[in-house]
Image (cartoon, rainbow, N blue to C red; front, side, top):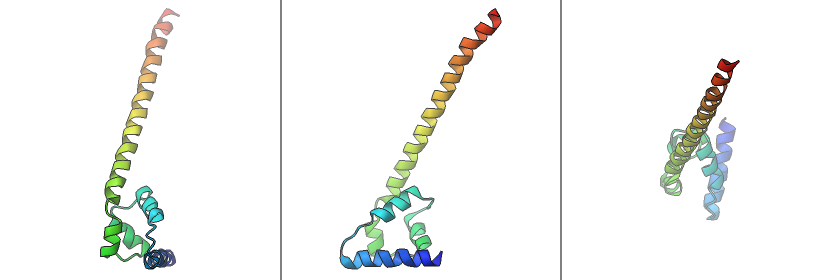
Length: 100
């Protein structure tokens, strides 16, 4: 795990020094990963959480929260659809069973 953290720190430092702030990879990993906060993400990846990192990651937590809410909404929607289909099938089958 330390090697991976060191690799992330190294990549982040190279990107920062080159002046090309390409944090897309880090952002994607944070948003899709199981991290409590950007600070937690940085700690787990071995990246120094300093002013530069905080500035460049501003808004990531809100995007992650919005994505999670959207995902939960879709799950609820699909669950309601399945329940509704099941109810319709049961409403249709029960009268047919009584006739038999």
